Image (tube, rainbow, N blue to C red; front, side, top):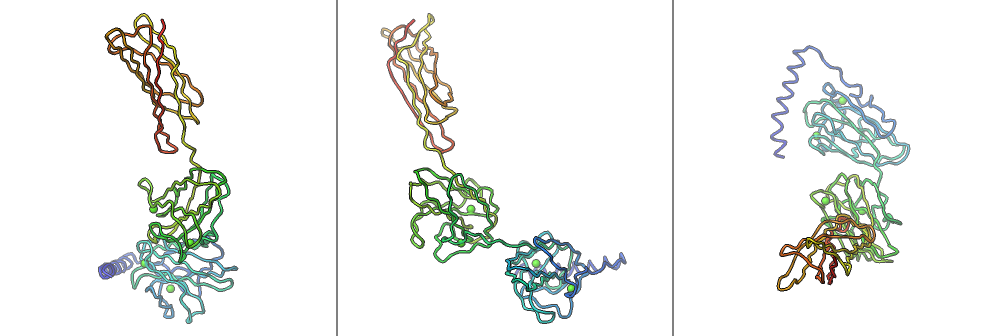
Length: 399
Ligand SMILES: [Ca+2]
Ligand SMILES: [Ca+2]
Ligand SMILES: [Ca+2]
Ligand SMILES: [Ca+2]
C-alpha cells in the first residue's frame, strides 16, 4: 500500500516526460500488432517467447478489467492447447510495471482465469490450467495508467512433479541416485510432516538391502530447499533427519544410517512455504569408517652417531591419503634417558611400510632395548570424522 501511494506521483511524472519526448522528436511509434483483442498473437506452441514495444499500445473500451488492476497499454495473446496443460506465463525481463491476466470466453464477455501484477519486482507471473480446445487469452497491461515499454512475455508448460504425494514417492532402487524435477507445482498434503515448513513437497523412498550410511543433498537446486528423512507409515512418520541450509547455502543435506530392509522416506520441501523451483536431488552411500592400524617392528638399528632407525607397517581398510604420524623413542642409557621424536605424513592404500630415523634430543641412542610409541591421525573427508590408531612396544636397537 505504501509502495503504491509513493509510486503514483513518480509514475505521473514519467508519463508527462514521455509525452514531452514524443512531441519533441515528432516521431510517433506505431502501436504493436497485437494491441487489439482481435489481433491477438497466436501462441502456436510451448515454450513461447515474444517481445513487443507497448509504449503506444492502447486501451480498448471493451478491454476487461482485471482483478489485479491494469487496463492501460494492453496487448493480447491467444493460446489454444490441443491437450489439457498447466501453463506458466511471466513478463520477466520487461522494463515497465506490467500486469498479466488470463481470460476465456468471447470479446466483451470474458471471464478471468488468473491475474497478477507484481510477482518479481514490477513483473508479473501467472499459472493456470488450460483445457484442450479452449482458447486462453493473455492480456498484458500496465499498472493503472503507468506507461508501457519493452515487453518480454514467456509462456511455458508446467510439468507437475510426479512424486508430489507421499503415496507416489519416487522409488530409489540403487545408489548413487540423482533426480531433476520442478517442484513449482508441487503441493502440500494435509499430513505432510514439518521440517522448517512443508511447502511444495516431493517424496522419495529407499529400502537398502544392507546397512549403510546414506547422504542426500539438494546442492545445485535454484530455490530454498529443506530436506528431511522419515521411517514409518503415512500419517505416523518418525523424523530421523531434517536440514534447511547446509554450509551457508540455501540447499540442504542430511545423513542417516540406513538399516537393511527398512524403508526410508526422503521429503524435499521449500523453506517456510516459499516458492518451489528446480530441484536437483542426489543420494549416495557414504563409505564405512576407515579402520587404521599401525605396527612397530621388534628390531631397529642405531648408527655410530647414535641415531636410531625404527620401522613398521600402516594398514587401512580403504584408501587413506595424508595420514599424520607422530612417534617417540625413549631409551634408558645408564642414569640418563635418551628421548627423541619423529613425524610425517603417509598415504595408505594397503599395507604400507614406514621407517623413521630418530635423533635423541636428550642424548644419543645406543644398542639395546628402547620404548617406541607411534600414533596415527587421519581426517576422513567422506565421513567428516577423525580416525586414530596407536602402537607401543620395546624395540631392540642393533648396530
Ligand atoms: Ca490494447
Ligand atoms: Ca506489475
Ligand atoms: Ca507434496
Ligand atoms: Ca534451505
